[in-house]
Image (tube, rainbow, N blue to C red; front, side):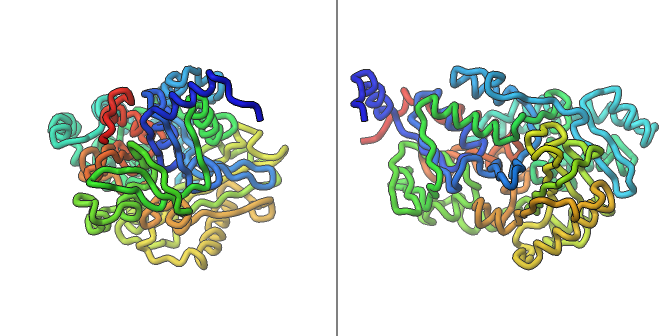
Length: 513
């Protein structure tokens, strides 16, 4: 091996002299935080439990099919563009984003469908086709959703709610949005037809929230999609993960896979680093957790260091639903199926009550069907299709034994898909596997197997959500779906951006002796 040049030795010495940030988890939140902290002068090490980066955005490759494990809807491209710019590169040089049209198709239980797009005229035509009298109400709904977007996303999304003062400063905006109303209540005040009420309120499920419970502030999702579009990253969501890892390496950062954190070490109220399940200790000046916040506090920090997020408080939280995901490939193509489709079942409010409040695995379901090969043929072998179908289900408080229930549940879903949009499905399968709420707990370390952390209720949002700067441990920070501002790719990326309001630039960091 060649000896290092004097220039290379100086570069290594300069890198080692920087204050050290350890990031737990390589999901979008962790990788975005890594890029942002690296740009602010920190030496960054990202630790990932799995054998490859991505977290919930992990990629499975089976029998020639490429399966994105989790997020598939990409909005707000500028949040990715900012990360590439911080690393001195351009997103468009590494990633091709395709704007989808329609964004997704909503299929109702009676077979009628609604194509949800960013084209104002076509959206009005869809509204008119289902309920002409609701057209004025749709216009007023869009205006209110735009208002929530300006106040809730643009003004508050990237600011850490770090103190009661931050809450008080945001209170007038929350009051103006009448944030105490549920999303469905807000939608129903504008639209009368039940199908349109479903079509304009189900978006909160994309971030783990029951539209009958979450704050109406999340109507901003509708405005956000209209403003920025719904996109697909060619090569899959995993292409974005790969690109972010490349940025991190280009900034001198380190990613270690198969490196599960067992404990966040704390001395006199301040974190000193982490200990891995292997027993290795990694010293750090700050720790950023992209792990589930409930898991972080309950499982990684000793109780004596937690006065705020005690086991009792963590346990009392209301958690989002979990997900059952069936990944499968077919030897034929289903060209009538768009890239994104929601298939609604016979019940809406009652089913969501079973999932979120009764914690009951019902015999009926609503589904999200993802067919990436509709837009990106490289996601499947030639002449084939790649799919996943997702069903919102209760988290593990349901008591469901998923080891025995997963296959019957999959079969029930397959029958519905065969009857509706994928005829002959079972005979066309080439590969098949599943993820259950038990996997969310055991593999992804999500408390109760909840897929999105705490449910985004008004009193579990913003200041009431686990803070981006830990309330319990100095030098500990949070990013990801389970902290502010919440789940969804834009929310997770914004959580990393919020770090910049609470984490100092490395040059200003004071390390106690």
